[in-house]
Amino acid sequence: MGTMKEYIDEAERALLHTYNRFQIVLDHGDGVHLYDMDGKEYLDFCAGIAVFALGYNNQRYNDALKAQIDKLIHTSNYYYNVPAIEAAKKLKEVSGMDRVFFTNSGAESIEGAIKAARKYAYLKDGTTDHEIIAMEHSFHGRTMGALSVTGNPKYREAFEPMIGNIRFAKMNDFESVLSQVTDKTCAILFETVQGEGGIYPAKEEFMKKIKALCEDKDILLILDEIQCGMGRCGSMYAWQKYGVKPDIMTTAKALGCGVPVGAFLMTEKVAQHSLTSGDHGTTYGGNPLAAAAINVVLDLFGENHIIDNVQKTGAYLEEKLNELADKYDVIETRRGIGMMQGLVFKVPVGPVINKALEKGLILINAGTDIIRFVPPLVITKEDVDQMIAILTQSIDEVLS
Image (cartoon, one colour):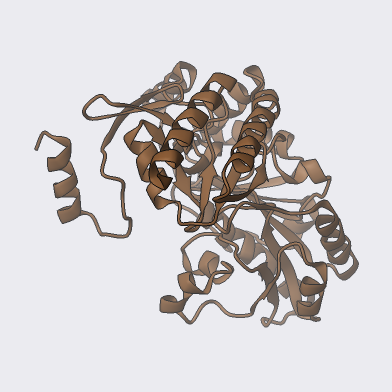
C-alpha cells in the first residue's frame, strides 16, 4: 500500500461498511486546516463533528498528552488518579454541576444519564415501570439506550425492541410534552440545541416551562450537551445561556478535543438518590490519559479566551450565512447559535458538500437538506470569509 486510492481500497475490504466515507485519506492537521495523503490542504468547518475545538496540532495539548503517556495511561477505577480528580474539579467549576462520572463517549454518557434517572425514580417508589419523555427528531447516539431515546424511527426500526417506556414529544412545544406526562414520568430528555435533527435551538420559554414542570412533579431534566456544549454556542454549556440548570447533563466531543472521553454530571440531590456502588461502571472512563486531555482543554479554553472568540466570530459567521441565505433562493433559512449553524436548502446538499471538498473545504450535513457548520472554535473572520467564498463558488457551480 502507498497511494491514497490503495488505502481506500484496503479500508473497503477490511472495515465494516457503516459509513459512506468521502474519498480522501486525511493524514495530518495544523490549526484549522487538514491535509490528505497527497498534501492537499482543506479548510475544516467540521472539526471532526464538533470535536476539535482548539484546532489541530496545538502544542500545549500535544505536550500534555505526551507527558501523561510517559507517566501513566490506565489504572482502572479501583484506584484514584490525579488527572481524573483535577478534571472533575475543573468540570464542576465550568458546568455548575456537583458530581461527575467519566465515560468514553457521548452515547455512553446518555446511557449513564438514563440509568441515573431510572434509579432515582426506583428509589422513590420501588417500581420499575417509569417513563422518559424524549423529543422527535432528536439524536442521542447509537447504543441501545441512546437509540431508544433518539426521535427518528428510521434509526430505531431494525433494532427493535428498544428499552421501552419512552415517549416522544415535539421540541419547543410545551403542550406536546405536557400531553405525554403521566405519574410514571421520571425524566424529560433533550438536546439544548438539536444537532443531527437539523440544528434546532431550544426556545427560552420552552426551557423555562419544562424546568418548572420538572420541579413541580419531581421529574428529572436531562440536557444533552454533547454537541452544543463546550463553548460552541457562546457559553461553556448551552443551557447556561437560558439560565435553566438541568438535574443531569451529558458532555463529550470537545471535552477531550480528540481523545475519546465523555461525562455525565448531576446535582448533589440526584447523586445522593440514584447511582451507588455497583450500579454503574467503566473500564476506561476517567483514565489518566483521557483526564489529562480534559485538564489541558479546560485550561486552554480559559487562557485562549475561546468563548469570547465564539461570541465574536460566531456572530460574524451568522451574519455571513444570513447574507448567503438572502442571496440564494435555493437556501430556505439559517438556524443555529454561535458556532453551531445550519443552512437549510430546498434541495439535497450532498452535491454542494462534495464540490466544496474538491475545492478544499470540509463541510458536513445534518439530514439531506442542511449544511452543518461546526468548525474549530479558534476560527477567525478571515477563515469565515474563505469558507464563504468557496461555498459560494460551489453553490454556483452545482446550480449552474
